Amino acid sequence: MSYHNRQQDLALYRLFQLISPSLPIGGFTYSQGLEWAVEAEWVTNRVSMQEWLENALMNSVATLELPILERYDQALQLEDTAQLKALSELLYSSRETKELRAEEKQRGQALYTLLKQLEINHDCFDWTDVQPNQLLGLCVAAKHWGIDIERLKQGYLWSWAENLIMAGVKLVPLGQTDGQRALIQLSELFPAALVRASTIEDWMIGSFTPSISIASSLHETQYTRLFRS
Image 1 (spheres, one colour):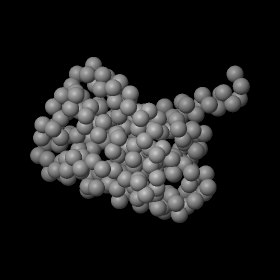
Image 2 (cartoon, one colour):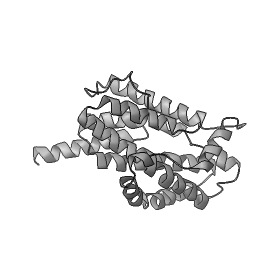
Image 3 (cartoon, one colour):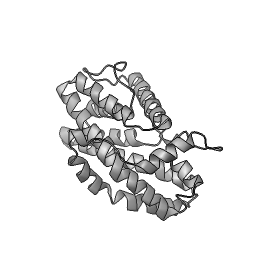
Image 4 (tube, one colour):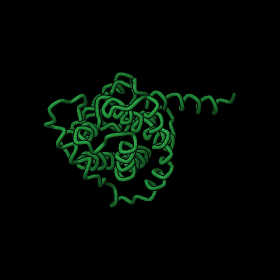
């Protein structure tokens, strides 16, 4: 096996590590409004859960997170610190509720702490200089480990979907087989989400998911909660 192939294999394994539920950033503790949607009976079964997640995928992940991942990657390549700050402010301001902003900050801070402990950094990136968020931390790690941005976006989609579907399995509740069916069907939309993300111009970056914003806001005062958002 050539040196280049070995490096590609290592990068792939590091991607697996980044998207693993065992990565200690608490991704499994958030439902992003899904817990309230179940309480309100907006989501009652596998089909309605898939519809909820499909809406989030195509109208938030594909139009906000994926385009920002792409632009973070470009800014790190160009060592454009001002762009890193601007993108971080845009991402944080696009989180429409107290809980979603707290989740962004908490997951980002947890990832920053982990990367510092692993001595992973980038020359143009100052940990204290931007709003903490997971996406920038993922891009810094990807640069360090030689993970291609397209692979990182694919990995991010899988991690996002797996975490929320597992939340749905607990909340609806669903059986494990139904959870796997939902993951298969949702992941079939990933290519379309990646294509949509590639068409998003700078001025178009953002999300439009009113139902998730409402659910997230009401989750703040939900009587019993298993999840932090």
